[in-house]
Length: 114
Image 1: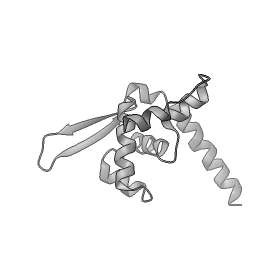
Image 2 (image 1 turned 45 degrees about the vertical axis):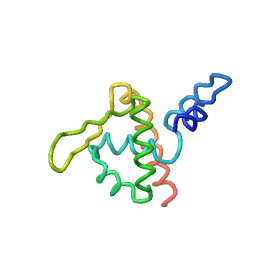
Image 3 (image 1 turned 90 degrees about the vertical axis):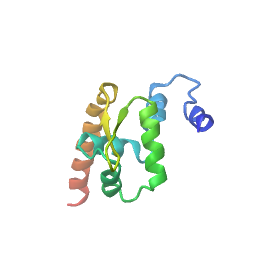
């Protein structure tokens, strides 16, 4: 995983947009962050909220977001084991951007459904 991850950080011109996309680009990461921000903070809830994501892809994306300190994972020593995710303070800095994306998407949906 480390070699694949290293390739994702390729940014020879130190471009801010490239760096941003390396962190949260792709189909799922923004959706995962958004879901966690709306209290969809357990693995099974995320799977239900995003039926198109495979179990392995969700695991990988959560690990990368945790590795990048955007989310944190808390394991509760219960039977059965309970794991919850939350957005870190660093990850919270992405929420204004995600809110703008959400607003734009809703406005565009209204425009295209008329």
